[in-house]
Image (tube, rainbow, N blue to C red; front, side):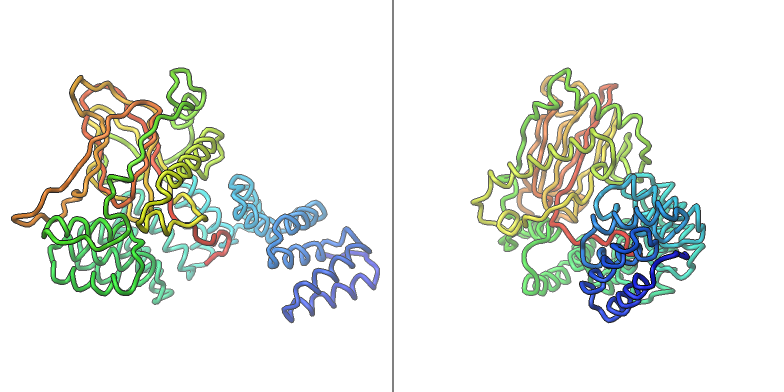
Length: 474
């Protein structure tokens, strides 16, 4: 990148580089701005200034200078990559993907660009494309443990558990203490119901909800003394913020007729929210029409869902996609989450008391069922509040519960001992346009239906937000 520029501009650039290397980003920014005042079309200075502004958290200004650098010199892969990272952080997924693709067209072995592009495609439900680009990242950098780990997740969503396990093991080959890969190995064996193996990997991982999942493994395998021992430690060490632990403790309390001493949401049926959305319930609803059209036509891959019978589930996160209908539904659901929290704001349980102001959708997906369709009883372990919006429902014979939604404190083949107490359940009749929100600790299922019609809903989980790692390449 050669520029015919005044010497004093080059001097300012050299001084700025020294300040940047010494950690004085503010001074570096000041010097680079002075340099650009003398020579606005200096490609390298625009790039350097953009990097410093990005490090200071000013993404908008950084993007402006990266874009100026691209106008001056279009064929710089790293500039496209860095712009992709900024747009990914800002949730401009399509623009970010375009920049990563541009970087890869100019430098096919740009492993981190392929990795970040794969992450976008994963979140958009483009499962096969994500697999392709994770593999491209691995080809470019065979030791990139995160690519193996995320490829394993994508393969698991496709139903290839054996290949997924091999990917996690490869990630651990290159990074033996990689907690995410240890955790994901635990989840793979968890899904295979090999609870002894899963428990071992969760104990080694020690991240996120690994202790709750290990607790589940001991309970599901009816190791009740082991369960109580682990629970005692967990109750002392952690706040009561785990929906999965809440589910386990509630089931154990009924099973053995003991007190439920976990304060996430001890009376979950009191926190079930069931309302009609006028924006979707009207027979001629434009939003519902658009949602059904986009569900039918959008390029979204299906993911493997072992609990779902006679139906399909979308991959990725619908609310991360660019379609206007999904964005509008996401905002509508957010509004009702706010109504939910406002309705129960004075409740004395951790679900409400500790729910943070900063929130995000753990995921959102559609489920399409046909005749005979149903979803067996389960919980969503990583959400706090779960829910669904109903776009299309089969006819229900009078007096029947077919196609209805059932909530319960028992499910998922949890062991029931002789002399157990009564496991309470509640069936919700549904209408098109309904929204249901409930504590993620409640088991839920779809009652099978016989009508030769389709049942379509969009489901989601809300949880406390975490800092974004988009574009980190880690």
